[in-house]
Image 1 (cartoon, rainbow, N blue to C red):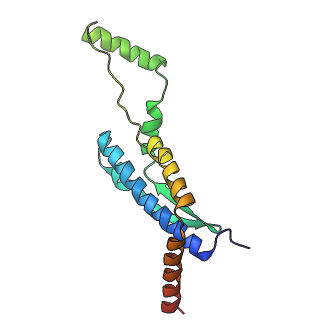
Image 2 (tube, rainbow, N blue to C red; image 1 turned 135 degrees about the vertical axis):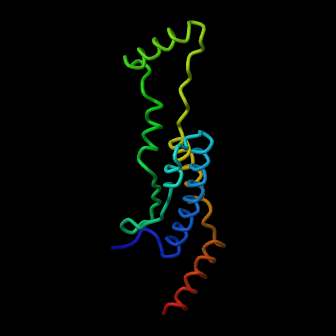
Image 3 (spheres, one colour; image 1 turned 90 degrees about the vertical axis):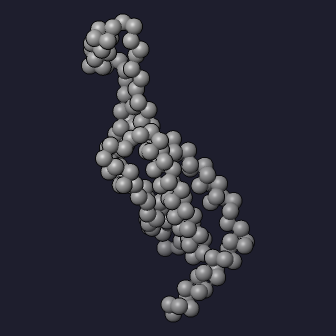
Amino acid sequence: MDSRFSEDELLWIKDVLDQHGEFLHDLLQEAVESKRLIHSGDLEQSLSYKVNIYGQNPALNVSFLGYGRAIEIRFHKSNNSRQLSALKTNRSILAGHDAKPMRKKDTRWYARNVYGSLNRLIGILMYEFTDKERQRIKGILQQQKLRNP
């Protein structure tokens, strides 16, 4: 089976994906902290990334605890549900009619950061594999072959 990319291109793509994974990890960690989504610290500690090979192509996998995504999805839940409506009615009666309405906590931390950073990654992959970078990668591959004959 022929590979879509040469050996030096694959090594460069893995390196770019690893750098993007680190960038994304920092971005997500900062978002979790800035949105104050830290209750026990488990979500923040569970953030990780890894570059794997699927078939013949490198891929970046980002992982974290599943409830982290659920809290973001819940932010978009409809405000028209009966249960929320009943709670709002009770709150307004107990607090008085002058009370300010409670604002929903902004828990959007994943989608904007992950999908928003894709254009950055695409730009790097499309335009930054220059001749100089190609020579650097070939040098690395030659050094690896000399060390591991």
